[in-house]
Amino acid sequence: MEQSGTSPLLPGTVQDLAAGVVSALRGGDHAPPVVRTVADDGADRLLLAAVRVTGADLLLPNVLLRTAPHETELALFRRALEAFPPRADSAPAIRWSHWAMIRTLRRLEPPGPGRRGDTPPEPDASRLDAAPWQVLTRQLAVLAALAVPGEECAVTRAARRRPVDVSRGFVRAVRRRDWQQAAGAGRWLMLLDGVPTTLGLEAGLDFVELMGGTDPRVALQVQAARSIRAGVFV
Amino acid sequence: MASTDHRTDELTGLRADELEAVLDPAEADGVFRDSRECAALALSSGTTTLLLSPPTPRPKKS
Image 1 (cartoon, rainbow over the protein chains, first blue to last red):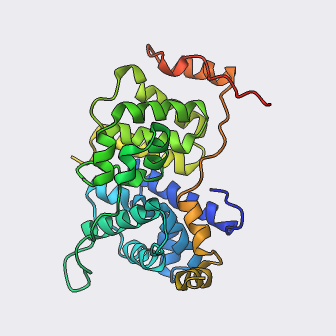
Image 2: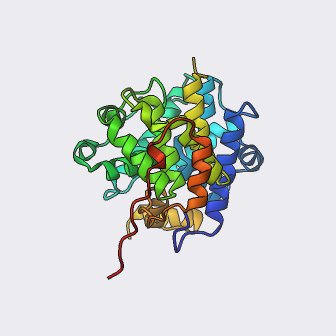
């Protein structure tokens, strides 16, 4: 998150958004307070960038709990999507995160004249099948927002074909103390069949939360994994 | 600089490539957990053992 040259305010804003999502997933308010506060006064530009970084997970509580998003939150989400399109030379992960936001928007926006159309074709995911398990896990963790029950895409199918590799990646991330990656991988594993029982996934996620849960972005992934496990979306 | 770069810069003070680096960050160097964390994991892991296997040796500095 702490990339040299990026706005120093961006990480904190992203963390604020993530904390709001965690609260909503735990049964609190469904609109992160920062969104409601700022969006009501006109979304500022830093917030748009933070929404783009948070991506589809900003509306994860609405997807899992099947609730309608706050109107201003949806408008902000749409603006961030339009403000930061992938570039011609953007990496697949950038294209996928943008695609995931469009898919979420299409799922949640109400039908009517304001609706912009269908979800566009999926970006390329062919590299995932040939990727070493370490690379696969890193990419899946970056794209953890795609790990949503009942949603299919090429990334989901690639993950489903390699549950043992993702399990190995989860262990590797824990041992490297990369809590963000471990939490993202753990969220994927909650969706997959064929995960070795010896992995101790739930205890592992508890440990990830214990060690890295003060970062709201880590807490978001852990809470998402628990929500998926609990089947709150059913 | 592409047009999207200019637009991103106007919006946030961030260049598009900087924002993309946040969205798809390079993997950080590994830091292996210490014995205190192993003990914490042992307490929380119940009957499983995979995560408790000895840490991978640190690479030797040449």
